[in-house]
Image (cartoon, rainbow, N blue to C red):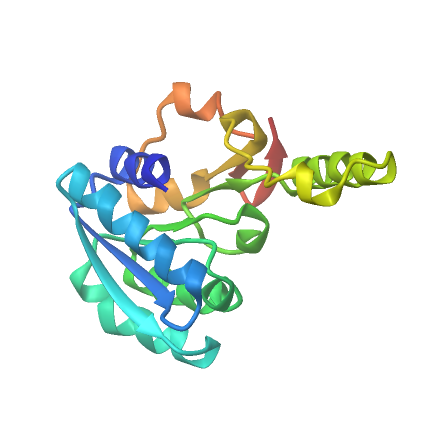
Length: 188
């Protein structure tokens, strides 16, 4: 989360970042708290809006959009399920959208999407299943954390960047797994 927030600020210069989270979803609350700590660490304000369900997400985005420079969407299941409504709000307000689930942002007007590569997650899951099938006690396998940046996908939407007046440095473009240019998704 901290690296995602840093990248959003690096590209956009945002001083106030909006975050919508599901107050009844443990991971949503934890991710919001991580985003808040990440913002505090670099001197950026996090403006949050809590929702109880997906039907409240668009209203929450509308409620904070005029008070923020960008919107950051974590991998909060409730909010990600309604990310298209957030993209609608950010697009109409000419504000950048950062999504932590690249696949959920496909077809939307996001600026940056950076998150898990689900193919890698599938491979890691396969390794766990293989260990269990070899007879390793499941309780001994432990939790697998995917933390290597190489196992995450970074997407940039150059159409949105151009529309909003942002320049993505070439060094960052070189790190991308996918770039959107002229409406075309281009694997890198």
